[in-house]
Length: 453
Image 1: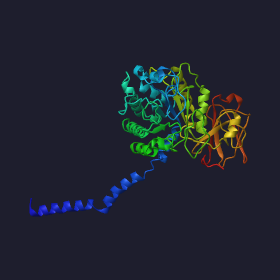
Image 2 (image 1 turned 90 degrees about the vertical axis):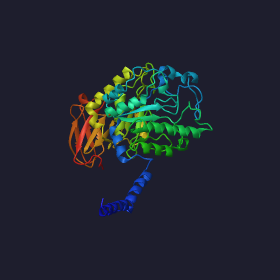
Image 3 (image 1 turned 45 degrees about the vertical axis):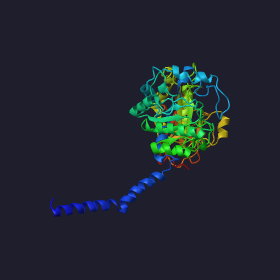
Image 4 (image 1 turned 135 degrees about the horizontal axis):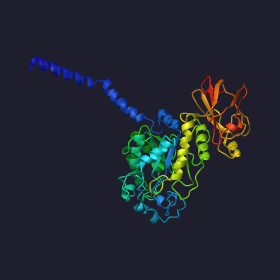
């Protein structure tokens, strides 16, 4: 290489080095870091929340070795419940050793996920650890786990893989209370918090994308779990996750349990409810009827909330045939009328208050005009879907709308009469065309359905 070439090469090296030291380059790196630090780790993004709200319907699964006994998960365990009164009927030495006989040979994650899809569900939330402390995943922090049972398979891993393959969004239920762990609510509770945080790190790094974390702190305070740090851990590892309100912090959404929440459009919410009378599997459990399931789903949607419906699998690993059949019936209904549920928002016709609703004896919705409970409505773009669950009379009288109704049709079949006047809207359907589950009428407006008087 000639002297001139060497000089030319050295000049290029110096220019490149100088450019990398310019403020613009260093600022770009600093900005990236500062954005990470400024991230609001206590709240999900609006986009992720909206995506979750549009899904409307999910499957909750409570399962563990306790299914061998047919009793309630966690709560049937004997022994002390530190920080909680009472005890369960199964002696602690029996309950805590059930996993040694647990071999669900017919567990098939693909079949569970397919059943959820057949039911019209868009996401699945699974109990990774309940109050009994047993882990349904291969945690490296304990031996009290499914991979130390005769089954030896990581159930959470198989479910996560099946959900990802089939496009079902994935959620993890995790109980902060742990009646099995020796440090929980003792002088060594700080050591338990470290364990808790460690397990959430495992759940958020080993199983691909996680869309939902469902904590269950039994009324505990944020300091009981060091929840601000916990939220930061979870969101840094899973930036698209949404987190519920059971870790002593508001989280992203409310979780009314076994009851339908009130209408609320300014804060997301989700009713979680059992298909039977027990969260875990129970012999000859009494199941909700199809009508009750549909009414709960519809009432959640008209209230601007989601619905998370729970099943408890058998000790064999199968979903009980009765429960599976009920889910498929819901799915058939949604195949026909899902457009009035998915991607909608609740309203504009809603219940006025809790007191009025209780007087009617059902968690339904009222017209704004106050004619008594009849059902409710969802809306999307310039369309309102009236969900008529009950006919208090031959005519349902609704409050007026800002925009004109340009057309209407009965999604569930038959005919209707809709009269729009300045002071009210009147809707009637011949008795022969009313459906027991839900009579759905679509109203098309000449403007946005959310833009009401």
